[in-house]
Length: 261
Image (cartoon, rainbow, N blue to C red; front, side):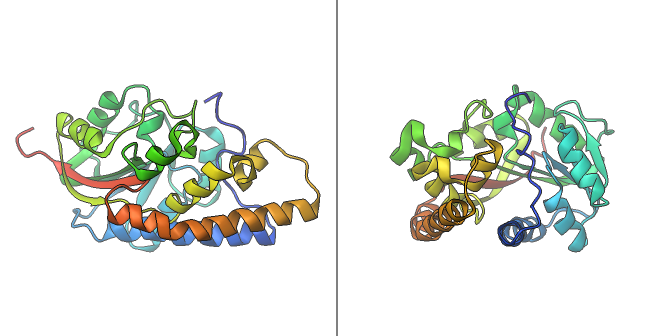
């Protein structure tokens, strides 16, 4: 946790840029919610592990899927609680729930951060009801972006990411922990184009500058923001192409429990 800057858990500032960024993130979160809610998971509670400020849980509630947000950060859980969301502060795999409490578990960019992915997924398996679904997203070390940028790929996010997975690695791990993958998605509206832009201009990414508390003039801030988001827009064709080739910079999997486990 000491490697996470105080601005890591995102909450928008009441500025035009902040409002536009929040709108973009909500559209991106809606894309995740659409993938999750299109599943045939049984009715019941969803657990959002690594929920941050709870934006995904908010959208799940709006779509008739009651959710509980879980995060280890007091800052993140405070933000989520202030939004009126059921919120628990805990570390995975040490989660204070009884077995088979949830019909679905969501883990978006969580597994890269945990010290023991096997223990984490085994704990998640115990929390799921029969027929329950796991939705898990990680950065994809078999992506074109990793091949192109190598150690300069922004999605490596060292030292916060402890483990990086190729798609096949993650599927093998899920199988070992009692899951069977039924769907795959290699494009994230929030992450894939932005990771190209951040790999090319790492010091211009707005969240990075906020975390570093970079001192800039208002003109300099506006110019850097404009150029950065222009580069994000220009990165969309490449990000879409690599996703079509099943080599996107992220992979989102839907998995179910093995019946014989």
